[in-house]
Length: 257
Image 1: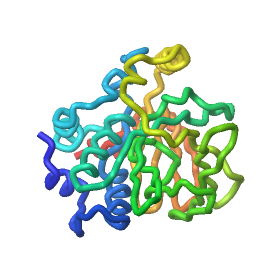
Image 2 (image 1 turned 30 degrees about the vertical axis):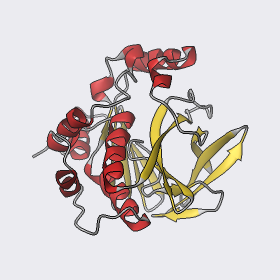
Image 3 (image 1 turned 30 degrees about the horizontal axis):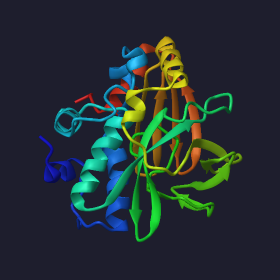
Image 4 (image 1 turned 90 degrees about the vertical axis):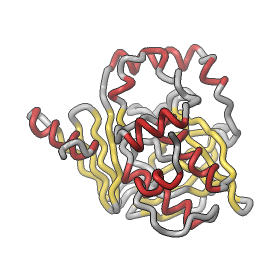
């Protein structure tokens, strides 16, 4: 059963709980550290990948917070939105197409995340994206925002808002693109052909993705490839030995006792 106090304890949040910027910043980062991303439970869902996008808050709370398992974007962001609603924030649902390896973007409804409207400003809130991405809420502005060694900005191009990130080295890279309009769950319950085709492609690939943040960055495990972002510096390591893969997965999921 959804319980605000137990949720806050799981996030190790002991400070004030108010609908203000500092509380939002703290909860956002603590959520990314405390609750991992884990796509393994959804690998067999095929074209029904987003079927549960309108989450049952009690069941999802019992699974992620009480049970300690990881979740995917709509579970993590959906549950976090309920918490923010209970605290008193003005929230809503957004959708994004994630940048693919070839530089293109996935379907507009590929990724489910959220926003908070605070003091007249639109802030992006996303605790359900495996990364590399922002650890704290992001203002929808092309002004550069510094976070733990990485720079972020939101630029407009081709009719979209695009979240971009730049680490200590390299150029700006798109994270995902979106339109700043509130979404309805019915849009996923009646998926467009491109979304169905994309889900079929993901199911065919069968790659499990897991990730968790830490104080200065993120660890992202894509199949057997481990990407670590620490203070804006990225390293990639292939995990050939099964023992190494198991150890890293256990560390991300915190299942090693």
